[in-house]
Image 1 (cartoon, rainbow, N blue to C red):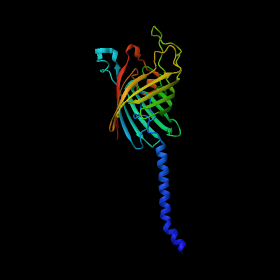
Image 2 (cartoon, rainbow, N blue to C red):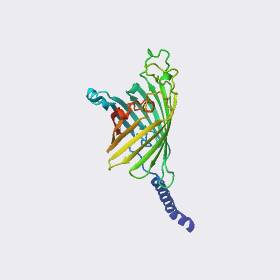
Image 3 (cartoon, rainbow, N blue to C red):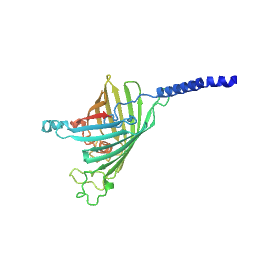
Image 4 (cartoon, one colour):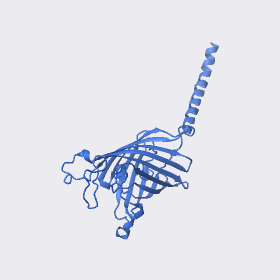
Length: 292
């Protein structure tokens, strides 16, 4: 009887001690994770390894103006804006989805970003995130393409985002990319005549790279670039290069940047960037993020 009484008295202590130990283990695990390498869901054009928190809903308004070298004719591109509206939702701690509509080629896009592995302080050295999207170009008109099917409007992107936060100020990312356009734009010769058959392969490859450097408590400088790996030599398109700053203001992240790409969806900026930095073919743009 004495042993039974002793067990009853000690049992709560054993249980609470076990709970405290488990809580301590969970804390250690949580503390081993490295804080997000990027504050924005995008670096500039390139998706970052940041995901929306579970249950968070983002509304993003993005503007990309025309080339600044147009001068006062359209007030340095301000009169000709390309707008993207995007809705982002954190389905879980590892999955984020988004839907958007861009003025560039009247494009609708659905995408998912999913965490594969987090960077750890004394363990795994990088964060791994997958990104996949499908986009539909609704600018293509049936009168121009009488035999067009809906599938001809579609393009697809798959990326592996690999980032490392080196310290509280510096984060870098690489993004091996595969994208496929069911319809590629005709490449014209010097006389404006399409080169047939089209030398650009529908399946294309790129390697994206970008980084963020924190300059002050709420400011950072961001840069990203994507090198196309199998672009046709006759193509008029160029690799996108973007430079900008992020400003954190409570529930907002305000991103301002200069880029040679007017498109903001993945296949647009990866495969159809026409601007040349050396000729002043640079767009001013900004993204405004609001979290609910």
